[in-house]
Length: 184
Image (cartoon, rainbow, N blue to C red; front, side, top):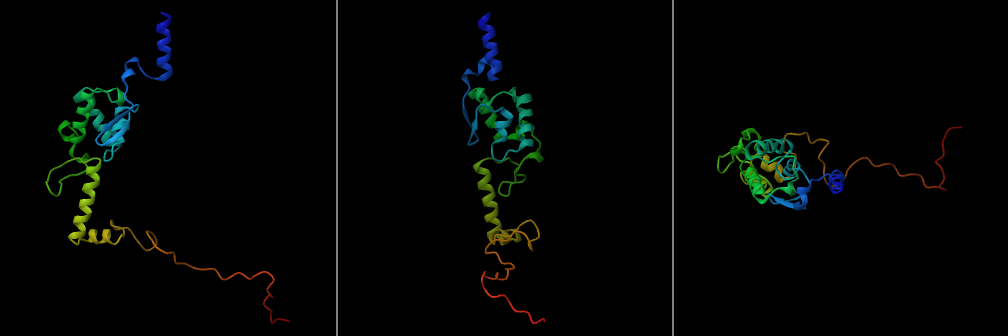
């Protein structure tokens, strides 16, 4: 009985249950190392290409469709649940995530709605910019010259390079004769 109280006190002290003895410190999700002590929802949010709203929608799908509690620590999930989570991240539309939440609607090459994360997102963005540059579109030329792309004003902001501005007059050196005034 005294031992039971002691283990309950340790649970409260550390904030973990006894089943978290198999807690993994680092989990790899979609090419990103994630801290194992984070909740599933927070861990999904830390992947590049998944924002707060998308993580919330995915955690809702995890709970209702796959039976995984989003409040659990990601390090306490089994390998089977982690693979389920990976499939959800790769194809969220299959699990009921609405189309407007995907970050790549009507992909240029495939014409499909998809959600791209991690290094694939970086590669896709780089490909889009290089396609615009080679097609000589307005956006491509703005990207090529390093200017603002989305119609912002450039008269006073976005300046790069050497500063050009007003220079102050040279200060009078101490000990130099002061200028004489003609008033008498």
